[in-house]
Image (cartoon, rainbow, N blue to C red):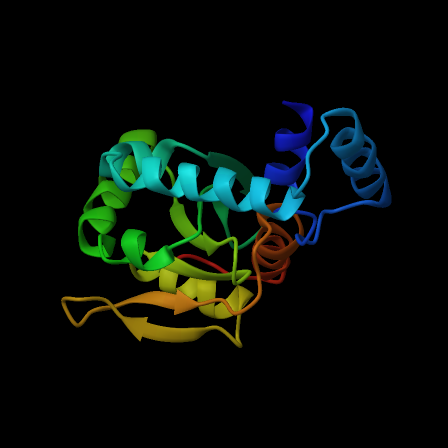
Length: 188
């Protein structure tokens, strides 16, 4: 179980939060558990998780892995929610972006958040897409990720941002959001 937990948390030792300790523990646990093919184990684990995600409600997807960060600066005082969905098939989740947008808006209003993002992370390709549910999300995303590429959803609205190789909320997303807010970003 510990082996699977480490593989999941580190995106099969490919994620930016992977440490040498993680690599060493995986090597030890592979031997102890007599795992012949750790790549196959990780692949099967990720596929099972992604298959299960496809059947979840929009509310469960938005709330499943969501953290809230509170800020107080001269220009902005409020809370930023940041949800993440990790999957091997981001197209399955992104095909639901229109319904996820309504769930994001509802969740944002219900929790009294100032901003709410949802990152859909492809854990095989190590790429992600940010779903933007309103003008403040678009504005903050543009400030935090100036190299992000805006895309249209299936309704033709600009509600998606290609985040390239950013995959870690802890190392890639929140530091950039924090820098933008502390740098003077304010809601519209």
